[in-house]
Image (cartoon, rainbow over all chains, first blue to last red; front, side, top):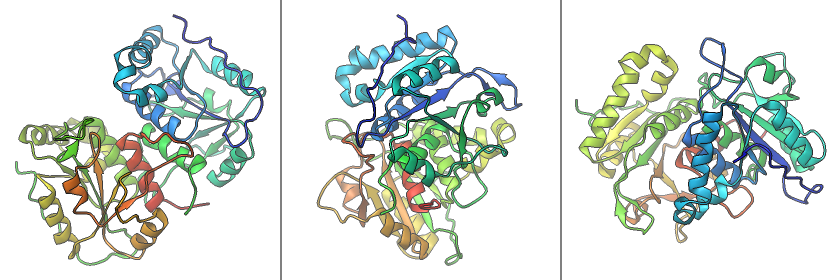
Length: 203
Length: 203
């Protein structure tokens, strides 16, 4: 089963539906010593992030992972929930996990989203690194509402490698909750960022 | 080691620091058939929710779990991160997991928070059930900013049992992202709700 070649072109902007994708990057990312590594896929990253993506109308949740054994693990998990026993046990989980597509690398990811939207989307990541173009949540939200395609990149491990950051258009500010502590799980960070960009907004 | 009797009284309101706690309820909750069950503690609920709680300045993250084997598991996990190898391996994780306290049941939880804040806090939960007093996120946010103590209850399994809902003061609206799908993980829901109530607000 080839998991990385599904072209899913979307014809033009659909009114009211955000043109947004997210990608969880497993390679290249950093370890705690800032060395470049490939990280392992975790089951709960698939489930939690897919459920958040489905809730907020994300088009596709891309997993960028080059290792064949990891891709095979993802396939087994998805088969269970999409066509196996899980598909009848929990149809809501099937809806969410159906958003997942696997890419070998960043080139594959960029090619797929460009093909889908008809042009390269604006690519944003979160990072505490200075020297990058910062795009506020309010500004990004408005751009998405105006129909501009966006791709959000999230890193595993200790964050995205420099060669990934060199290929993005801007960074969203780090999520802070009032204090100094800023060490959310990627699952929490994705959820909060989707709510800020695509949620109902201030009540 | 007794994990359920730590009284941590806080003397009055501290300016600018929200008086807010959250509790993850493992019993009594519902299963998919709406039967009352006790759910198992999961490692990632501890980590993800503690990290979000620490980020947003939550005072204490209570785990309500009556089963002694589950309490023992929680103790082992906390010992590793608070005093064992984990405490030196990752001090940020230690800071977050240090917010966790275990309660046997809802009576224990209510007693602890009432003792801590000097009065019973406003208790809010999330629920799709109708017939409850709904408190909007904006309204709850203002009340917290004005210094009123709040306790947020989150259910595991298929949600909080009726006998828990009978003892709360109001429900926060379900989290929706624009469509019909509303099946976030509890880890995502906690993260988003904390950001809505305690985050920087609209930019």
